[in-house]
Image 1 (cartoon, rainbow, N blue to C red):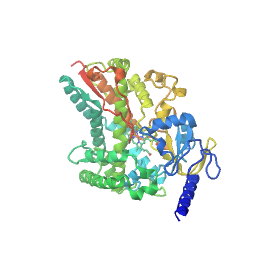
Image 2: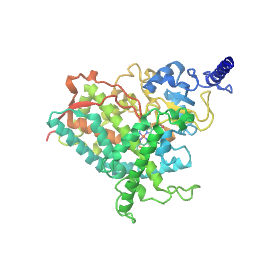
Image 3: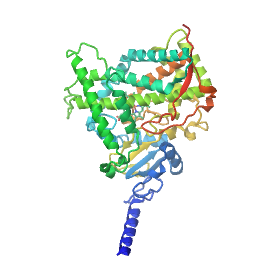
Length: 505
Ligand code: HEM
């Protein structure tokens, strides 16, 4: 009897092994898949991802090529690692790959896919994206919030000035993160982060959960077991978050001017003024009415999409500038020429700061905050470059890998060299696939303009107003640049430096 059980177990194991270990080049119908490493039963290739998966996949792509296929848990995954391949997925076949995978966190945070970032491609997503771009993220809206940016940045400079007067070190990561959270809260709902609502605390908790590796996203059949307890925690925190969001909307509803004569104070004001009205033209097939859940889902999309990404990008750029004193000197020279030393930088100065622009591009090349963009998902079977890509494959575009490829950026690809953008031929709008930190195509970042103004302003102001020294006599090249992978790709350690005020009073 025991022998029979053992034989049965062995046969089952052989069966599972043979049916789940994929032979890299063909699927079960014999169609040619992109090359990739063999996968193991159940876990697929998950064991090949370490703490920095973008780096692991970068190395694997050197072996298997720029279109590589893997299986992460039960999810067929395609890793794209060259500009030519990215163009195929994000431009040539943009529509097929405009889907987003369903992840567990989005079930709790997007009120049944009523936001934008994790909403499946379709008529609702198109409507909400158009609506947000027009009412919240257009050029005129970005300009409208210039006074808010000026006021918040003024407070940041004052705090740093106090530290400079006291000869103290500044935790730049901490200060920039606080600044970004405050300014995002001001723009989105007109309050600073910790203005009695505990919003900041709750957002931080949720962000932490969103950044965790969630096994249910790779083995959805295990989701009901909630092995890591993530769903339970998400449920709890999203309920608390909902209460705060309801309160924010109530406050806005009470103060709204039904005649629309008062200028809007913030994004929620804009959205609340359209409550119960159609989001799209009434002549379109399916009208979508603005309801509270739409507003809450959009707030929950925009808060993390805006604050964390911009903070991390500014801190990386600052780190690179501190590591390269020559770049700091050139930036300060440019600022002296354009702004002079008697006043602060104004937003109207930004278009003249050409070297600053090159520095930002170079930093985003080496430190994309979303190293795989936001994962895309194929919406039907398709053949790309001769390879069969099955419906519902997850697409990871490894922008980190593309930013460090010597075939694109020459032998000095790993060096921080802003001058490589001197000719101004490459921009960030997603047309030059070698540099796509904001993505490209239908799903590209709609907040890019807001992000770039904020990044340029904060960096230029802090570099214009202060000279900076690294702690404990640390030499520039000794500055630790270790990354940590999570919701985004920030520094592993906080960036600290000592300021000296340098403007003429
Ligand atoms: C999507 C980058 C700032 C809102 C994305 C994507 C990337 C990205 C890579 C995914 C693109 C794709 O999947 O192809 C960044 C970076 C930022 C930044 C690097 C700052 C340096 C912002 C800001 C906002 C914003 C300030 C809004 C206020 C969004 C939204 C999406 C998105 C809503 C989802 C779009 C969709 O799925 O249709 N961003 N972003 N982002 N971003 Fe940003």
